Image (cartoon, rainbow, N blue to C red; front, side):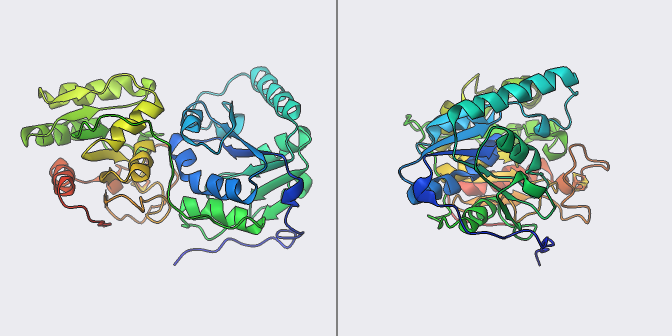
Length: 360
Ligand code: SF4
């Protein structure tokens, strides 16, 4: 059963915004690539409800790369937000403050009428609501079970922990009078020749989400020996990880995909027979393209929060009492990902032929 967050007595008050008077909306999803993909049903709902308004996206450098694939988005503001920087070495306070002041001025210059802040269960919306208030945005909508005073004009109690990310975004909009327009992920992926094969993405936003590289190398080798071509991909920061998997597999059919942008990666994923990855951006790119996907799904997030819903999918992992942990580094031995390479490779080979959904 999903745990229901506490409702603060000051939350959920006030009428929905007068959308007819809204001309410019800033949607915030400042975390990872996959989170932006999971926000696409909400952006579509907003587009349909407020067709006259310009919708811009505030995203991280990696999330911003998805923006060209979302036709409803007019423009993107790219920011390495201080409130998203846990796990990385802190930048000097003067640098952080300067960047935030510049962001506020950038937002103020665009004269937005409404700010919609999408967050995951473990994230606070209040820093960005504060930025929006300082930038003079009149309507500021957030999910929170915690008090944030006047930083938001529309403070909505979140849905239960464990709610799927897509539904969580739609829940916030529903409270603002915006009806849903379907839950399917939607990306305008460039057309490419269908190349087939396996796309293997060993990366992930943090170490606790990553199935070990040596095991991914073994998965790649097993798939190659079964006759599949395996292309290993990762972000520029994951180049060493990609090399480790390719060299560890030691097979002519296993090679790096090479440096590609998110639109090209989305196209390659759309043309693949199957994707093998962690709970990362590639999982959601595969779901958007309806490409079968095997995911080594760590217990960092709940099983109900981010699974694919449209693509044939197998989620592999062990059920552990410490999940969902939200840890960037596992304090134990990553028992939640104690799955053998043989299990992963077999699941991928099963998915190449029959197309059926199987969540374990
Ligand atoms: S084993 Fe537990 S603490 Fe470690 S990553 Fe998995 S769910 Fe988190």
